[in-house]
Image 1 (cartoon, rainbow, N blue to C red):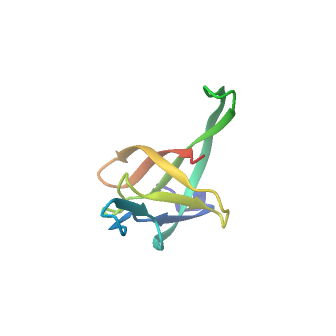
Image 2 (cartoon, rainbow, N blue to C red):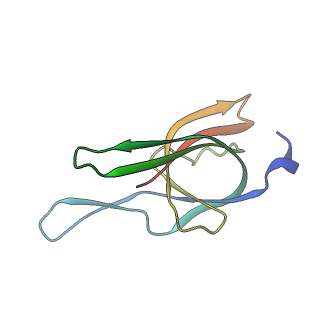
Image 3 (cartoon, rainbow, N blue to C red):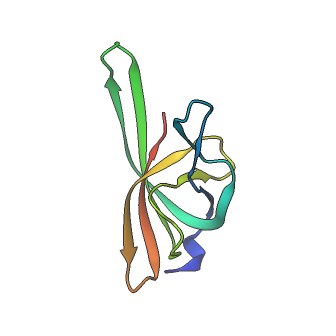
Length: 108
């Protein structure tokens, strides 16, 4: 993997599950767990109508980062100091743990 292509700043947020006052589990992603750099390729987008005639826009991307064993599919991702969260939909190890290729989808 060429380090010269890792232009984007990437922050990974780990999922934390806690209980509320009624005993139900609540998922949150409070703090940055991993901060690194990666290469982003936009792979497409989609516009659809929900059952309530609401327009839903989704944007998909492929993110390549150096391999880290503590990156898991339950994490959320932020790119380049933006306020948008992305969900990891697919994860692939490249080579002999040289890099990770992640498919991301923008969270609505």
